[in-house]
Image 1 (spheres, helix red, strand yellow):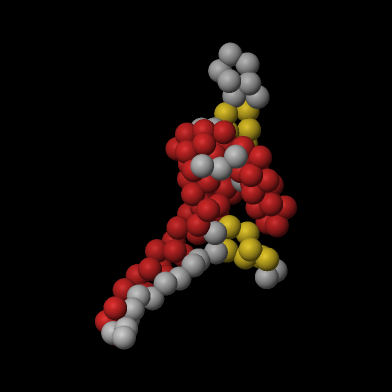
Image 2 (cartoon, rainbow, N blue to C red; image 1 turned 180 degrees about the vertical axis):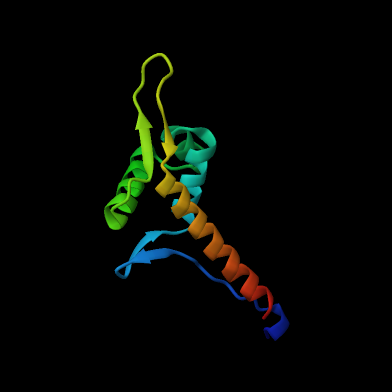
Length: 109
């Protein structure tokens, strides 16, 4: 028999636009990893994603929001890279604030 004290409250947070999901924990992890690594490929590898999956996810975010969230730089001697745009940073910050607010609210249960 399960004891009430053994139960946990679980939750998922995501941002949506017009009822369609835009970014959840996986997307936030991807944006954060791009911010930290300066590369979509390195971020994808660190998270165990394929580059194709990461690129498709980023394009979905941009299509659903109408915002450019990642700025890519071409290769050459420096091999190129990627950075979050100001909008991408704000999107990540909004997600992280929402997730923190939900987590804190549930601590009080």
